Image (cartoon, rainbow, N blue to C red; front, side, top):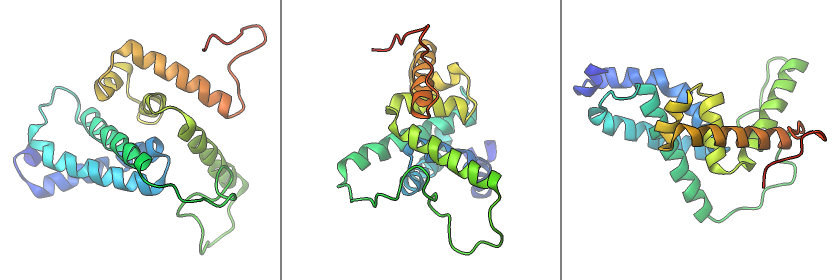
Length: 191
């Protein structure tokens, strides 16, 4: 870290390479789209490289980099809303092959692999339907394994709000995935 902050390009490259996969996973889940995730990740890596000298160490580097990546994703989602939407074939969606999957395959996929891909597609589709603030909190907790205080620092909100967003986001995810959290004995308290 110190070498990267001092201008050592090799140290910066090693640091970015070490965190690339986690940042990619965060961007992929927050944007819900491979192309937007690539754009957001590129913006995040550039912002990290440009801002590394200003990193003050008050939060863990991972937390700081997640904040940069989350902001890049939110910026990308705002840009997406301003772009015209192209018609998407009806066969795309839950149960369709993920982006980048296809082409030559050396062996047929196992049932477990097919189920894992289908589960990931279902979760990606459900996450895409969550409001941004719930999606960000759930992804930072369940994918990035940040605690509530770290998520609060990343999103700039109090830990109590983080808890609420995670609870509401998980509840909506469960409903979307066919595992409703409300039972006949316990009616919904959501508006």
